[in-house]
Length: 503
Ligand code: GDP
Image (cartoon, rainbow, N blue to C red; front, side, top):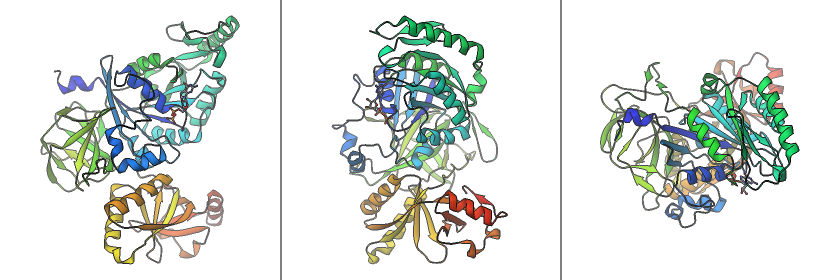
């Protein structure tokens, strides 16, 4: 076995971002097929007999036909070990989706070539682009009539503010699809069983010339910084262009990166000291155990089962013996893992989102994960007034875990909870009932634009029905504006008041 420093060079840890229905699941399946994890497509979404599916946690997933929380898939392909961190693709995505993007080294962006950049893709891209990590674009569904590729690339550059570098170019699409032209090797990859349309090939070759004269230069550094995205075309459904994509992706995507600590030191993945951070906590994967799993991204050093670590936040020492890693089909007990890998620690309430763990004596602290501005709000009340104690305990713990964000009315003591997606409320309600035995009731407030305001600039009279004054869980004042118009109106009225998008 190679040492871990050698092993980590072959790690590729990424997430796929897309708008629902662009083909993320289908592409994931093709990648798993490449890795030999599954033998036929169509097995990921309909996993009825999967043992995870029997848990009550999964009941929500099954009811809704979506994955509530991101899971991790690991497989090998051509000497590389690939970790895909899945991000829910439904409109009702949650903060977990965002936080998962803090734990990857690169991102694959799947775009429907008939539709172009859709809202959720843009939203997720914005989160990713703040981190400055590489983004690889896959325009999917070229087996169907697609928009003109120049048009798609233009839109990509203008709506997302990133430069594009086409790696290949579709030759026709839909029923006249001839293949893809590999721009770097300068060769046509034929679409199997295409009906020949020589004029389509001629037209495309003219475009290709244009691209080569006028397009961006290939710049590996710009790719590494997320300023330039390599662009690929293909069809996940018919597995065309996927192998080419995967090969180039593995070539240019980075291995696990160094990470900055709060005291501005750099932790190198090759360092002997084991370090990692918790980016997600998931409850009740297994109905027989009322425990949770803390997902840890390993930053440096080698993980060995049974090793001792310290939880930075409270100095607590713990032995990592009950650890899991997520394979495509089953959970396996891991013995060792290296930087870039994700391990799941069984947790009885020790961990919080953003926690750092480290081995040895030298304390390490990675920065907190960003919080995301919630957009949806509900007032929440306990149905049974006798259960106040478990109600408060449940809210406290679930807020700490990052399931939901908590606010209070400015004067009263009403609880208001905020989320980036509707699904978070459902998960919150489900867990309050199942883990804290407390039925709760929501009073929907709808979507709001949340903005923090400097307490020194605050005058309670600024508040109205269109901009509700509340406080966050640290008692900082926040305005919940009815909509952007209400916010703009406020800014016109109080030009000197500064509004902050997040804490
Ligand atoms: P997700 O919501 O992004 O995970 O999208 P899915 O992978 O579930 O795909 C949504 C729909 O698009 C499904 O009906 C897929 O069969 C279909 N689809 C995915 N990729 C392709 C493709 O390359 N070509 C065509 N024609 N359909 C596709």
